[in-house]
Image (cartoon, rainbow, N blue to C red; front, side, top):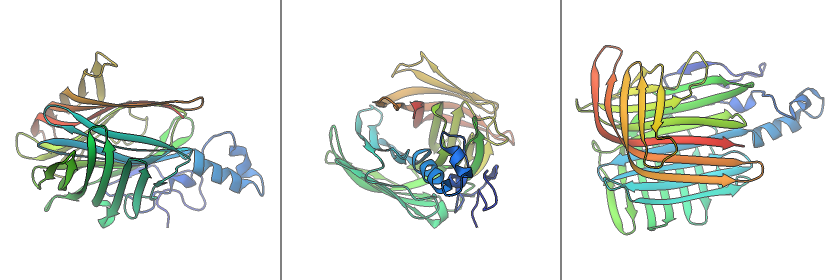
Length: 352
């Protein structure tokens, strides 16, 4: 049985869960678009469905990992008419960036599994290969990475897994977007990461207890013009807890939100999130994050940008790798102190 849209409905279930969904079939929901009237015409409903699922649905899995000497991020994503894959790594603490980014037309070289629970995601084109295998019902991921970066070859394998004894409360949710659109996401910030990467001949090990990871699997009927700021990080607090944060601004108007903290794997909702950049638009700008239970500042370490400017598509993505410091207060009133935990801040502005 499908998890979001049943056979007698055209809208998904609006709800949240403490685990990823096995069949988040948001692609079966109807949306408003130019060919939408065909769905009511006998013999042409299939044309509308194929167009909608092929060219209006956007999907990706994005992951980050950090250890003492390195921060790495990678993605497999598709918007139907184009796909996106990248790998970048920032040396710590200096911030030297090793990166390879690629956009391919019509999903060439790209496979997105329909969920984050099983199957695999693949992106492969000249100079870059990203392979993510979803295992253990969305609680273990194996990523094999290879790229010819601007500073030499990068290759290796990373394993993202829930720490032993962790409560492991993942967050998945489905919410409406303006204009009759829909958004499903599965997020978690609290993985132990093991494995190794070799960059330009230097091997960097990701050791258990010292290496941490985040993940974001999303399927959405995105808005024609999508704008947001987003923060994702994971590491150890001063008190010794593993903490993960996922913060987005603006937050969609919905009864549930993806703004979340994880303390040793236990989910805590975050409300009234506000993300700021000062001065805005500058690569070296610091970020701030405030909420009812959060007060953070971020010092920029490295900057990565991706741009595309075509007649029907304009894409601008800026990732700032940064060191986050401040305080997070749990619902029980316990305060966790963050001292330069490295994560990413994303500034996203796309017409598609």
